[in-house]
Image (cartoon, rainbow, N blue to C red; front, side, top):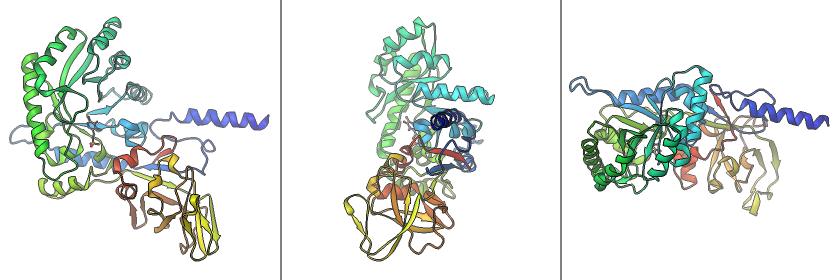
Length: 422
Ligand SMILES: *Cc1c(COP(=O)(O)O)cnc(C)c1O
């Protein structure tokens, strides 16, 4: 009985504390120290925003104002934790981009709790009927990208609401959006629903900026976008806010910046790709933008022990000790987002030293070889991603071991992992 009520209390504390927006702090005892945690550097996040602001500049000579900076905080802020990231970014960017009404509502709740002025929220993708009214109610802006306009309009009408929207034009990604060569038809579709949709912007998304160092395809998309945007503006009889650039295009294709940029990965201090970094060297005058990774992922070993020569480690007995070996068992596995594909290739950092991951990454565990790392014990801090002393373990490296990209590594970090601001 006693045990049960203690469990209940721990569970209640745990759920309550999940809602502490700005700090992500939880009460002691609610979360086990046995689990891994993620450290978010608020300074790095602010620094990256400043880097982008500088890059976007604004040109006094041509009186061209700098584009607005939209920070993309979809997918739990690329795994960084929506409440933490949105809390830091809220006062220093012009809008927050998300992909669901649930995220819009939770940001509005955060604003209320923290006494912040409501910021602009832009929901990417194509708005769905179920979410339209909630978005209008919380004053978010939505994207019209080919969903059922009549059904969406009917819901808004019956709720007596009007939704601010951006028309997404498909210029060659083949995802959401109305065909660029069907602007006339799109405008006709929009006419009868003009009472509930306030069309304020026109947008698109690039298909092939990050994978290449020449921007021919992107330039074609951009031409198509500009043409379609002008046609739509003409049809609607007013100027629309234009946006097409994500992180990479904003850096390597200045013409794409338009009125707003929607920067995701770079705000978190990661380069969209090696190709983008190379292109940026050519395109950007002066130093390369100094992006600083925001996220570190750490844990402490559950067990540190000696294995004799000849002992096996992990499922499938894929690793065998050729000499007496000190192993550390880490409370991290593929459930948490550590890729199983990295088995046998990856390393972690302990006391600033590289320690190879041995055997297979398991659901909740992985094993590393800490032989020769002086003082390695259960109290040692282990770095799975991030910096430790003079060594760095970037998301790109873990991505290369797992045959994927840095985006997937961070976005898949389990939402159950505790995030702390450091
Ligand atoms: C995810 C996304 C972005 C951000 O892309 P990054 O490469 O992370 O900067 C921008 N626009 C749209 C439509 C997106 O889906």
